[in-house]
Length: 401
Image 1: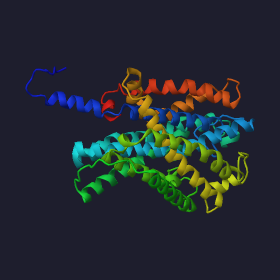
Image 2: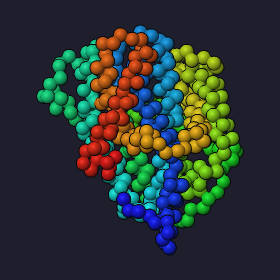
Image 3: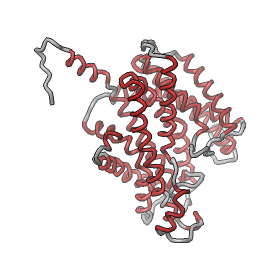
């Protein structure tokens, strides 16, 4: 490694090194790791009862209504905010990447880092994950033939798909959209400004809720559109990505106060208690499963408007709160955190087949669904990061992942 002399008359290397270290937002790295782990747990929950529709692999029987309700609520709450938070953080780092690399290198980097994993999952990991269909009881799938290479290749065209890599596909689209915008708008200098106040944040939540309600009249929650399973959340995803890019140019994360983060937590908690329960069951302070849950998914029902207001306020409030929380308490470099950060993107790409086959390997352990979810999670999360470490050891893989 080249040495930097502190006695040199040219201090540019020292200044650059200090600037890079100061600019590194370690708390954002740690927050992305936490979100990635939550994604894995979300998909483990789908195995043990949170899935209302088919999934790569589910484990019956679902004999505990309490476990089903708990895992369903866990999945719905996750869905309300965590992918929006991913888009916000992705948007935050997009302007800096474009500024450093320029148009051509930026687009090439996006195609390599997003396009190649997308193709690999679509044509390889998705079909492998769908082997879980043959591992489930035939009463759930209607499949009576044992899996053979002939059957697999015959079914292969139906097994390819985006899966959770819909996020990568959408991020690729947003990245190209940002590049086009920069071409049109030109290179405008970044101007630091204070974080918008509570009124602006409140107006954003209301506008987002309205846009989400209208979107869900066309594509209800839970309805997949061209392999995008949560396109009903498009207003949140797009607006959070745009806000992330604006926040990067204006330095909003630096001026975001701890008080606003605390208020964000309060808003998230209050709306979860009042609005989520009202939309979920049609009754205040009740989480009993009724037909109101279907109404909350969209199609113009009043419960859908309440649900959209809840998940908009919840997503904004919780994201603001977590940013300030991580900035205050988890904003330093350490070896373990760096390891998790380096491998979290790879975990996102490869975790689905790991979830499927580990869950199947645990199938004969007799535990109640919530206990099984906990056991599987404790086993699956470390395996995902170990597997990611091994994958990144493949020649040239670390340049993409």
